[in-house]
Image 1 (cartoon, rainbow, N blue to C red):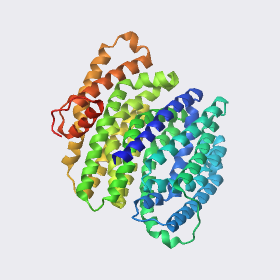
Image 2: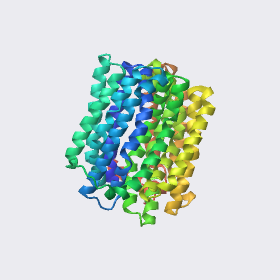
Image 3: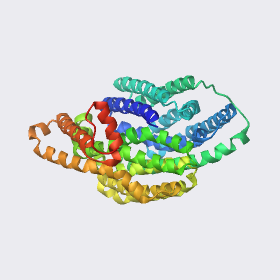
Image 4: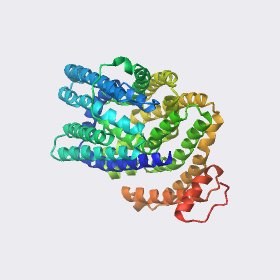
Length: 484
């Protein structure tokens, strides 16, 4: 798991760093409403994307054995679904534009929906690489895709193509992804009419797809409601704050989720090992990612203003508030890995449906308070849903609530003193330094990094003793007296 997660982490690090850098360039070239236009469309195309995949790709990863015939029937079914979905979007695009009273949406939706014809060519080789645990290859494909997509988008944005720069950039990335993944997986498309062969894959895939669709609806409710009530600019601002808040989560938890899911699936019959993998993954990811969120709480506004410019400063409040949702995102995410690996998706689905209702009510109730209110509503609903997901995961693994609580104690023990140190440092920082946003971020962030490293290496935490020992050995420091 460590080797697999390391390669996923490298890929995520590259994606996050380059995505952040390219995102800064695009944010300075394009206005918030440009991003809002595309995000509004993606609420619908993203939802249809789960239908086109049918969840059968994850079924291929989880299956004990897979044949060429299985791959062919899954590809055929996904291609058929993609063609139907594209036709539906092409015909309904004028209605969509009329609903939003924006004629541009007709062409935007028709062009964006072309991606559904590429998705089967991306999904199948990706699933093969995932099943083979070739995380290094997947990381390389992801980075190449991001480079291609971002390069095209930046060039077109510079040439004043507006929202089309984002659309064509995404299309270029899809083409590069499909070509590279197919070559690395040594896979060639094949058609099949043996639909009975995919019955079991379709059963599991349906549950995966249903959960993904409901989760996606929940994640996109804020964009959908804000686009109707407050307009594209508010959508762009809120999405920027949310994407920044989720960046460390995607980087850390996203790097472990795939590997954890594959490991739990391989050890379905060994609950002792499953409990250990689940609890230990929560502990380590919380320890490594939590300081980033503690830093965001103090640096949200200068970070947004200094990096993206004054026109994006309103995104800082959602960023700061949503940072408090980090522990709940982590528990929700890893609990989902347990459900998927142990074929408990039928139990997860009612929870996800409940989450849509709770999230919608929270957004509507807090909308009068603006973007900050919506962020608080999302944070509260996320906490509630994560508790339900965690209960399902603990029941599946026959674990206790105490196990989950103990898993978070090391992160809390390290980050509480870090938060106090940052508060004192921010209070003592000269006013002249605070007036320069990027210097403020670098100074306080650097100080926090040094403090956290010292706490991690020196604080006597038996649960983290093996991890501390690894870092001490790597840094050639004296061994800790804490038993390992």
